[in-house]
Figure 1: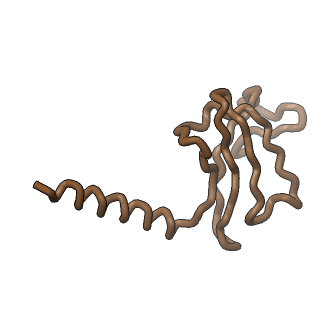
Figure 2 (figure 1 turned 180 degrees about the vertical axis):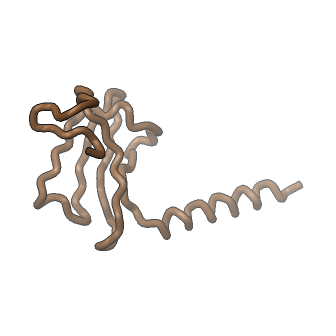
Length: 102
């Protein structure tokens, strides 16, 4: 009957190992929030700041913070999670902007 804690522990260890081997790129919640929909700050990244190790912090509607950081080695892809407001037009181009995947 004491196998459940052991199995749970092994599952947690295997999950953390998988994350560590995949690298630490992306947005990390500093407060345990689980979705990106409440990010309200505009995080503007200049080309000179778009380098490994640079961090950006963004506040959310629920007063929590998100840190944007990449600790990936050079040559690895970084998947960004973002939103556009106001919504871009679905046909053609909007002044100064291009629709995604255009």
